[in-house]
Image 1 (tube, protein in one colour):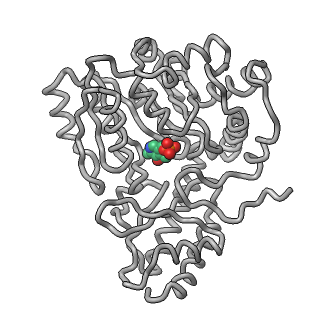
Image 2 (cartoon, protein in one colour):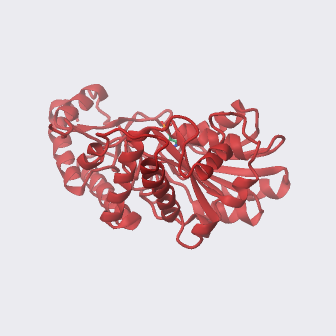
Length: 372
Ligand SMILES: *Cc1c(COP(=O)(O)O)cnc(C)c1O
């Protein structure tokens, strides 16, 4: 059986996985057997806590949740903000806006500080809002805003939120496992990510790293049965790794392999170094070809990079996309309002040599997509 892919995904999830991660899916598992619950699910939960904090792992737990990453975001918000509670959302892109939409849909009183897609959150405004309004109990922000690739200043935001004694929620979907952090050091209470981002598993579930003392306060707060984080946690604790409802067994088994491969690579620090080198080569190469980044370099994460479309009127994204796909690379359309752009992700089973090959492919595609 040929396990090679016809192209690599330079998209920020799902992303390219290793052949060994895909291979790990090729058997079935019984969801009430110890082989699965104690042998696979429990070590994953413990391993995720270790990835999230070295200084206080005993204060945190990991709850796995079926669905794509957004389901876990919705579980986190809908299960932690109490009835009558108020949530402040820091938004600077599509995913930040989604946090706000989730909260409003759930009927949560929501205050949105939108700093626009090209600017980081306004820290002084956050500080003032928390000082002025003690009813804001929870604050949520996206770690790496995948719309632009902006790395939001998590430590500074955490200092303000925790300085005011509020609960701090983070959507670290596209950063966790690829950008070093310690949830206990920062004082993060809940953090979400999913199987198919920097840990390099396949899509099918998300997870929430939760401060146990705060999760205990979340009993009966959920606005949903299937997305009840507290109940899911209790189920996994009492059932020793058992999921309340059908678990995505093959995806979970692949994730265990992905965790092992993250460890073998040298952990989060080594993965961060690889992604950083991928992104550095991408930007150097693209700028050499005359492309311009949307964000200033200093606001950038190593996860994904947005580029302005070439100015030529003959440029056509679809044509560019198809030519690159033929050469083995899939890129991503842009998402920034009012700017014609495209994005290239640098995470997944993708290496600096792949980026060098991509730059060569773009250089020759450029010749065929005439005019730039
Ligand atoms: C990928 C991503 C999500 C979740 O997306 P799903 O499509 O639901 O998996 C949420 N937030 C951010 C920042 C992301 O990058």
